[in-house]
Length: 479
Ligand SMILES: *Cc1c(COP(=O)(O)O)cnc(C)c1O
Image (tube, rainbow, N blue to C red; front, side):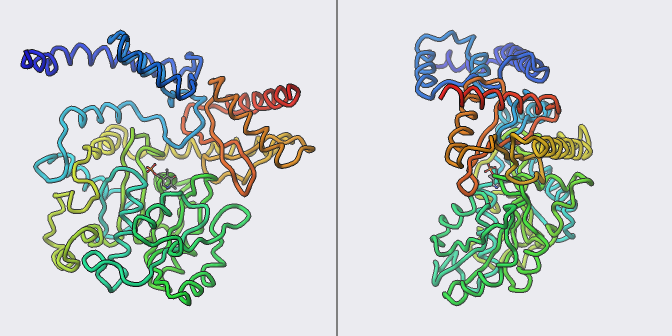
């Protein structure tokens, strides 16, 4: 009986049939989303209702409707009016590549469990290293997300910079890292996981335009040293998540070099502009970083979750988790680069390099330039439109495809406007025609957009502004 069930589960014919059906459903979905013929980006329901829906579905739902209903109840990132978070619309070829991983399920921890993707991973990371401007000794690997990659990089930094062998001996004394107040929250989380505590996170204030105030670095460093902190790393954001503003990586590089501390660049979002001749200057100084993080699932058209972590000195990419700190460093000529779990946080991970390799092989690196350049261009267009419109205010002139703005009326207090913009965003969410998000910067509530879809048009952006205005009036008069 059980055996019969399992035979059904693994039936190749069933897979073929269902697979074709699913690809057809997804292709129809893609077509409707891209053309904007599907009316909504999101059919928002309150979490409790969604929970009840799927509880009932498990009991009474029609199994043939399972996949279509999942599609219906998800946010449609391929819709040009999806202008919210930084997770983007994957290139369908990359999604298909992900299916290979989902079925072949090679675990990637050791070479035999993923020979092709292990080799591809080396090729891809070498390629990215060369695009960053790193030399021959650079190396990297792929890992599950920017959050994990940032933690891994800071662990590498600690191992590389400190004389004391914390990995084996445990911590003695107090350690610190320097990072701008605008950095992604995962940096603070990484520092706390590493036991640095609040005191160990030396938070550098941002300038008026939300980038790290590098004029304060020396002062904050000296103060930390006086308090007996051993500062071992500084993190630059390229760009920071909330505003999309880039830190001055060149200045940070100079500072790190002067004090012999590790320089890490969190380029989860914007690192991909190494492929855009037009926007590459946003990353000036990144080639001097000891380590760099770039998310594939943000600005590189890949499905979640895949991140590249690159090291200027490849030896460090091997030593982070090694028990004997010096062993691998000495033997780097013969390091078994192909047994990836020695170098990554994960034991098992997906065959994520296939997605990078597939895009590169199918379309060439020009595809990454086309994507990043198109989206950053749209960001700057949208910024200009907002700037020219007296009913809107930019948080900061956009440096990327992240644009934060708010509706203003020239009369209300900050608190009233905060409330109004919050309600505008909630109404937009419930309407579902557009999907945008929100952020609070220095007590001011902003609508936050990330233009992730290269088929979002200037017209879509202008219509969004019109919609926000209409909602603002509607809310104001109904109060
Ligand atoms: C998105 C983001 C992260 C987190 O990356 P995940 O892949 O979501 O874990 C870290 N830093 C920055 C700057 C980001 O934009």
